[in-house]
Length: 131
Image 1 (cartoon, rainbow, N blue to C red):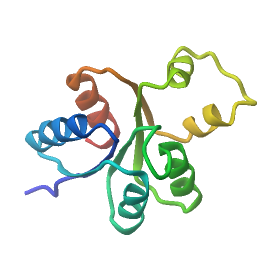
Image 2 (spheres, rainbow, N blue to C red):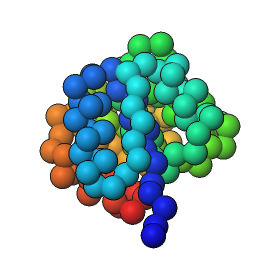
Image 3 (cartoon, one colour):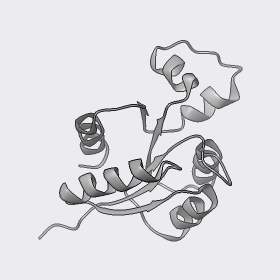
Image 4 (cartoon, rainbow, N blue to C red):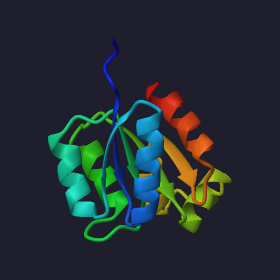
């Protein structure tokens, strides 16, 4: 019997969190979800997750602040940014600006997915990152 991979979803869209949690659980993952940044940061610090799915705009602390903090602390969880931010679209299209701190931070992530998305795309990306 294989050990189930753990995923943390941090997104202020409650409906999206619940839907993604159900889809990922059906795929065999153990899933925690929170709607606020500080709780997500605490969960990521105190638990071992194989993958974190972070939105950028979340209450309390942004997904980018969580990403930066976790990388500075040496936390090795894979991190996927899932957002509707226009910056991610620019980054995905390779419109790079090295002076842009937000884009520099986004590059610390292991994966980037733009909202809205197809659940199959997310599942495929997750399987690429953690199996």
